[in-house]
Image (cartoon, rainbow, N blue to C red):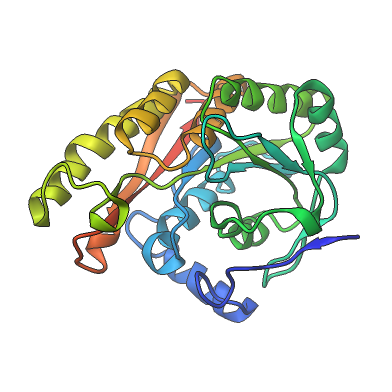
Length: 288
């Protein structure tokens, strides 16, 4: 069995089980901690764990908390990847992904069914791209869903994203899979390092990003408006992976989501004051 090896461990997140578990225990104490509810999916950030690991961890923990459907989760469907609207969506078709906490097997049967219904480029573990949007979620998934398998999809910000999200859920339902959906995106990348300085510099720029630019994207995700999610990301540069967010919103609607909540929001400026900074949000989709 081919294994997708870790590429960011030891730099973006810890490379040992002990250190990962210690970080996760601390993240669970941060801010509100995980939320309780009937959550079937969520949006997570993907910067290094120092910057956004707490938000991502607590969103994924909320998907496994009391109040969610009682039966064990079979499969996590993860959408991510930095892609342009014309990029070709791709999927990991076999093998497993490596984490410091152990491997996560690919749900090959579900992948095959998804690939029969929609056009995705098949990627083996050895040919799978190195992508922080995806890899930084694997240890959290392994920790909170130790017996679950995974489906990993790179999805472009185009009309195809919500179609892919809906189709993935339909195929999972046909196989009677109990699933959770995770979409990975950071928010506005602002400052000279990113060539985006329309609101000046300093605290005024931070407030504009928080209260205007990122707020508009968050509102679109909370409304589960996949068309507006993609529009926001492409026109206002307030999501780096709007395709993943749109696919997740559509997938959760298919699963019956009728409500969304924002677990948390932060920026890298909160940790390190700089003219260039990134926003992070955590969103959860619920049946009530």
